Image (cartoon, rainbow, N blue to C red; front, side):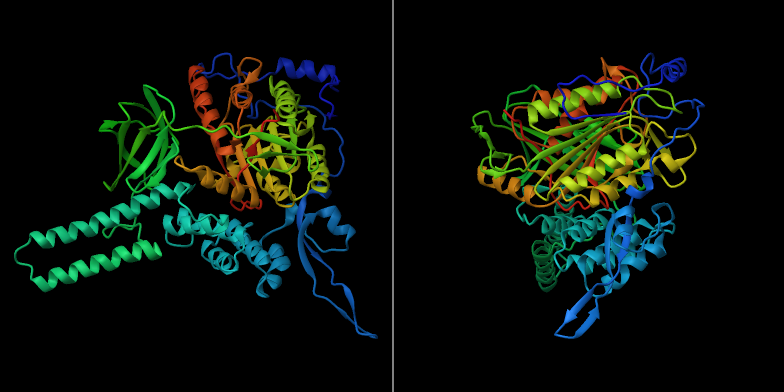
Amino acid sequence: MQFVKDLNRPVVLQADDANKATNESNRFRTAALVVGLFGLSACSGPAVQEAPGEGENADDLMVVDCLLPGQVRQLGASARFLTARRPIKTTASDCAIRGGEYTAFDRADYATALKVWLDQAKTGDPEAQTYVGEIYEKGLGLTPDYEVAAIWYKRAAQQNFTRAQINLGNLYEKGLGVKKDPIQALNWYRKASGLNSDNLQYASTIIANEVLQSELSSLQGKVSELETTQQQTKAELERARKEAAELAGQQEQQNELALMTADSMVPPPAIQILDPPISLTRSGPTALLRSAVSTKEVIGKVESSIGVRNFSVNGQPVELDEYNLFFVSIPVTGSRTNVSLRAEDIEEQQVGFEFTMFLDQNAPVKSKRISFNAATQAPEFDGVSFGRYYALVIGNQDYQHYTDLETPENDARQIAELLSQRYGFTTQLVLNANRYEILSALNDLREKLTEKDNLLIYYAGHGELDAENDRGYWLPVDAEPGNTANWLSNVSISDQLNTLQAKHVMVVADSCYAGTLSTASVARQGALTSDEVQKEWIEVMQEVKARTVMTSGGVRPVLDSGGGTHSVFARSFIEALNGNSALLDGNRLFLSVLGDVRKRSKELGLEQIPDYGAIKYAGHEAGEFFFVPAS
């Protein structure tokens, strides 16, 4: 294990030669012919039996719910009183030093967590109320109670606590504990961001627009039927028109629309467009194309709780992959190209969505200057300061009890160098780290980072999935098969990120099953935005916290090689950042990596689909991570 801060200095790796020889002879081989000579990188392979090494006490660096003792305060000249005990989230060692009460992270449950936060929540503290809501949503050993979670989130959200507003919006988007309502979800997301214009796009934005169009079309249809029916009296016609107008007004003023159909309790399928970016204009949903192309790939997803029977684009059937994603090349004809999508679930419920791709080569593309503020040591773009940038890059390759990997060290080295030289990150490279060393590096950052800073964490190495609780893990080099004691769970990672003061944190995980980190929507900018709106969007995204994650392959195995000396994902990630010369947000970086990884992995016989989203329970509010080139 070695920490490397000076990237121009040679790295001396510490490794046991005999151990490496044993691992080399047991290097992972898959029987699947579709993979051929390319290994699966971040998955646990056959175990190599070796004696476990000794390490420091990593448990002291785990984040716990800590109840600090009350403080003695002076009241007047002679009177003293003891304040109430105060709950915080901090490391176990810090809690012990400050005389606090806590339960070890591996023994914490629903009851112990509530003991810390419930009393404070009852006083009306929005942060404590949000934590109580998260306790009920997580379950912590019990079945999650989403209804109670929603109650606590609403109490905090009504006090404008942004984290609660994001969590509540996520419940409405997924229909957990509340009636599924994408419009309510979108409203809470927008309240959290502080940006009320239609240029703030979430997954629920397009779905919400579909609901509005569907409901309005239904009302217009009813009016039309009444007008063409001779038996209908004039009074009934006027009453129907009035009812339709009132309902339409309620749609515009309150946005309280039912998503479920009258004949079924199962919501119809929903179509989500990932790329190209779409803006909701008065003429309908529109995607702007800046350069002339013969075809444009449309990437999206069809969501259905009961399964999709068929899906078509412009009347042609399209096959969805195992994640219900679709990738369709649309011929671009002239300045306007209409795209019509239709989906039907197994109960024959149908939904449609249409948008127009508009080619505007004459639209001026202004190049804004990126500068560097010597006083704050932070980059600036169009007058917006982005704070200082830090990166923790972890490459775990030589394992004690698992098969060695081929590319993590090289991936980590080049990514650390790229972030440092091209994007101005203060970079820490950690190779072949055990659990304590990973937690120690995070703890050092906790003490260093300020609320104006940005942090990127890149992890390449083995990953594992605990099927019993559907929880993903990073595997340090001292991890043992079947023993989670030295594994690092995604829940623990989220807790670590939650205690960091940094404004924006992005995790990039190139490992198996890393997709269990991502469970919530992130904001994205609409396609048709003026300079003023773009600047407003950037300013808002910079002002609020972001905790996002890009994973190399969702909840499934991923390739270790296939990208030359890099993994397929790392190569695409490196090329996307190397080829960028402008301000780049995390979602646009993801879209670039997504298409490239999918294409390359299919050529190797194993389709790999990256994912991007917000990290739940890590303090995400509504922000986004930005990459600002140093030159």
